Figure: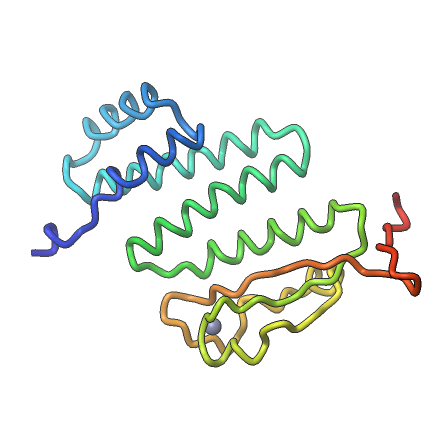
Length: 180
Ligand SMILES: [Zn+2]
């Protein structure tokens, strides 16, 4: 029965990965053939193939990104795929959510504006709800992240994330970082 219930994630993710230029259709088919020669030809193995492609893509991004900005942007795209994938497999997403949140902090840190971080709880759980809209300085979040929220009770892990807002001076102008 379990095999019948398993989702066909290969069918779902193949067109998405190709559409997003993460891999070409030709490469996808070639790598899948190689994978199935090495591994068992069943649904779990095909789903694992998608996960391995995503990890391979992360490796390439780390090697080929020219700027930090590009690195975090591209990593974030793949982490989002991994988030969706784990969600589809009903697995714990907390580690991937942490990586996505870290990318967001890093990207905000590269911005020339001074920013505050706002917690967005996305309807995560009752425990997290009370933190919704809490504001912190970017610096404090970078040195000690308040996410995931410790008291979170969501079974598959905390999905709280960050929003950002520019800090304004007394005249309402957005403040630029000293280093710019
Ligand atoms: Zn929660």
